[in-house]
Amino acid sequence: MALHHAQSGEVVNVLTHSELSAVQSQAIVSTPDLEVMRLCMPEGKQLPPHAVAGAITLLCLQGTVDVHAHGTWHTMQVNDHLYLQGHAEHALRALSDAVVLVNIQRRPET
Image (cartoon, rainbow, N blue to C red; front, side):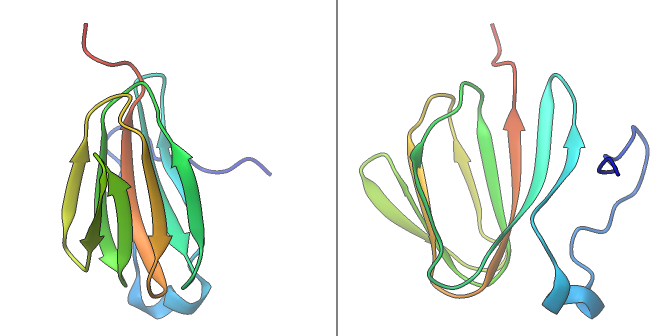
């Protein structure tokens, strides 16, 4: 079964409190220009250093995560937002069970 991706104009609830224990990482929007995903990271999980061509925004919805970018660790808690320019190498580690909304611009501005 193919994953459902939101269509233009469709409202999507990215974090329903009644399903927090079962929430999983999921691509919410996937177009040639934009990817939006809900990233679920259990405490202790790490994502190694990586970079993408387009700009990225991270919004912490639950828990606490550290993001390593521009030579330092940035701690994000609920409602914290972080912008990273295209090609910025970054890594993540969950300090507690965390959910992060990630937006990736697939085609950087020219």
